[in-house]
Length: 369
Ligand SMILES: Cc1cc2nc3c(=O)[nH]c(=O)nc-3n(C[C@H](O)[C@H](O)[C@H](O)COP(=O)(O)OP(=O)(O)OC[C@H]3O[C@@H](n4cnc5c(N)ncnc54)[C@H](O)[C@@H]3O)c2cc1C
Image (tube, rainbow, N blue to C red; front, side):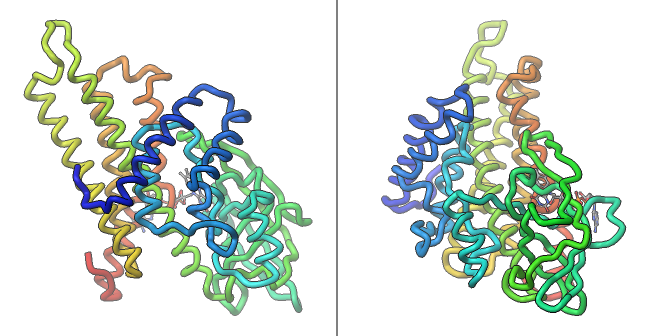
């Protein structure tokens, strides 16, 4: 698929491809404890690690299109250890002032502290997580669930309703008195999460990220970036799946003719390519708009909804065309089937995002798609 990429961007894609082959795929099957530090070192040397990090902290703050191209290329190889390639980004702590810049952002970017992101509340939470103000302190009560990586997190950037001031993102250290890890669990895609209860947790008021009342816009910016990240991974995984299927269809079936000779199979196969082409076109266009400084909140929603739904459909159809062998537990398509299912809920369920998009246009007269 030609994409009107500059020579520089094409060279970057080639570098990412070489990196995937040499540093990721070559380590498939290696224990994570050995492979991950090696991948981090290789990613630093290759200049990928700092792409997600701000310049003032030694990173290169790559453009959205640059990050999209690298993420898509790694995913198009279905390569292991992709999450070790990029350094921790600032997330909602981007641009934060003191004291959080020194106490939390710098150690996060250096890999000395780990962060979780706490927005989702358990279904049975009696009330949203809230804080009352006590002088220079916040006293927080509530619960969060589905905090990815929460069991290993040193702090959680938590959405809290501050009495009289509105929603805010607050940095809560997980070793504070009153913070209880109530549950660890993993989801179908293999990622790990934790649930927390906060019982009268005392947090300095300086741990509010930005200003009280800014919680939702800040959280939404972070979520918007992650939605594009998910869309890039989905597009890459669609490409990997279609490549896999192409190889399968070129091989002969029991009659000795190529499996791809059957017209019914070709119709399904063409659909997969059409969906992948559409998802990739949306993604690149949105990345370019973001780099031009446009607000792409609706475009990012569209990319994430479309790509996460289509990758599910692509993997599902590929399994159907390959047949029963693709359903064995260790088959790459079966592993992928479980992995991509979560993406229609993570960072906002598809229908909830559809409603957001419709509300922007119908109720707020905002958005152009
Ligand atoms: C892999 C993974 C990682 C995650 N990581 C994090 C994390 O780090 N931090 C965090 O805070 N959360 C995290 N989450 C949680 C995720 O953000 C939520 O699961 C997601 O936003 C959906 O919210 P919910 O599960 O509460 O479902 P609900 O909001 O209860 O929605 C469930 C379904 O109900 C229907 N529905 C809901 N509202 C409406 C409506 N208004 N109109 C029509 N239909 C509706 C839709 O069909 C929707 O899919 C993660 C989830 C996954 C799967």
